[in-house]
Image (cartoon, rainbow, N blue to C red; front, side, top):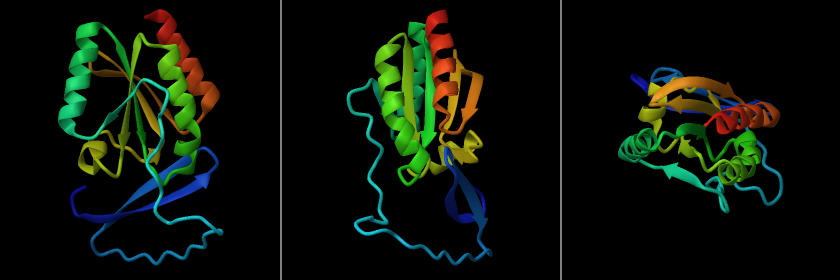
Length: 160
């Protein structure tokens, strides 16, 4: 994130949030209104009931990629953010898919918790899904497009 001191995040489309990196000499004033009972601080995404591995460190990532390679599993990596509405909507779908396709490995990475790591993947919007085989990207999906995500995961799951 060289030279960046912060980010502006915005959900402008119904299934996509944008992440903008700000240079240190750029100033932004954000005016927001929150509905009753809505908190500025969002809770972490909930993947309960699924087989989603939450990645919190680069070491976690390396370990899971190594494990998937050893087991011959394709990895589905979800780069998301707790403040992202579309990410929150797709999270239960992602968790359900992780149960339906145990032959795949499902990972989730919070772009705010692992900013430097996420920037190496050139994340420009959340959610962004990467599909990896032997540690190499074989496909990518940007946005919370449920039918397209299900189609890609099913194709990879059925081909495993």
